[in-house]
Length: 235
Ligand SMILES: Nc1ncnc2c1ncn2[C@@H]1O[C@H](COP(=O)(O)OP(=O)(O)O)[C@@H](O)[C@H]1O
Ligand SMILES: [Mg+2]
Image (cartoon, rainbow, N blue to C red; front, top):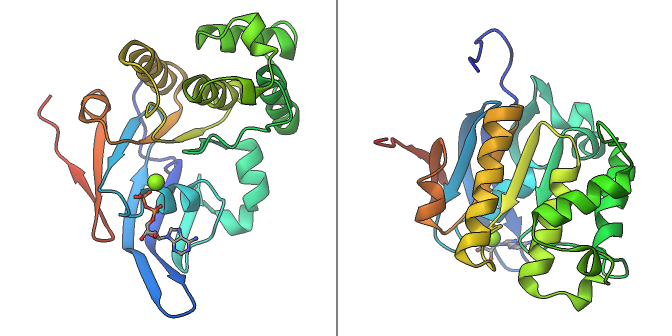
C-alpha cells in the first residue's frame, strides 16, 4: 500500500508536554514532543521504566489531555473531536493492567466492547466473532465463558488483546502487551499486529521492553528524558 502525502496523518502530536502536579512538586514527564503517526505502519516505543511511555499512550489514546500542545486525529484536534468519540470510534487500547471488566466472562468482555463501539462483524454474530478472536488467541470456548478472574495473567492479557482487535479502529495502542506471554504466544501477537498494520492499514503503536519485538516493527521510537526520537533501522 502506498501512502499519499495529501491526506492528513492519522495521528499528529504537536509540541506536547505533560506535567503531573503532586502536592509538593511537579514532574514534567514529556517535553515538547512532536511526532506524526501514519496509517499502515507498525510502531514500537522503547524507553526506561518511568520515562513516560504509559503517559504518552494515555494522551495519544484520548484518556487524558496534555498540559501543553495538541494531538490531532485525521487533522482534527482530539478535544474538538471529543475524547469519548475518539476512543469509541477510532482508537483501541490494550492497557498494561488489562482493565478487563472483572465481573464478566472473557467472551462478555469482548462482545461488550463491540456493542459499546457499535462494531458489527463482516459476517455472523458478535458472539461468534468474539469466540473466533479468543480462539485465535489460544482461548477455547470453555476458557472464553469463564469469569476473567479465573484466568491466568497471560490469559487475561490475551482477552485484552482480543477485545481490542474486535473493534474496527484506525489506531491500536498497546502498553507492553507481550509482557506476560511465552515466546510463541508473543510471536503470534506480533504477527497479528503486523498484519493489522500492513493488510488492514491500521496504525499500530506498541510500547515494549522487547528488542525482539521492536526489531519486527516498521519504526522504532525511543522515549528518554521527556523526548521522543526515532531510531533509524538498518533493515
Ligand atoms: N497520575 C500520576 N500522577 C503523578 N505522577 C505520575 C502519574 N502517572 C505517572 N506518573 C509519573 O510519571 C513518570 C512516568 O510514568 P509512566 O508514564 O507510567 O512511565 P513508564 O510507562 O515509561 O514506566 C513516573 O515518574 C511516574 O511516577
Ligand atoms: Mg508504563
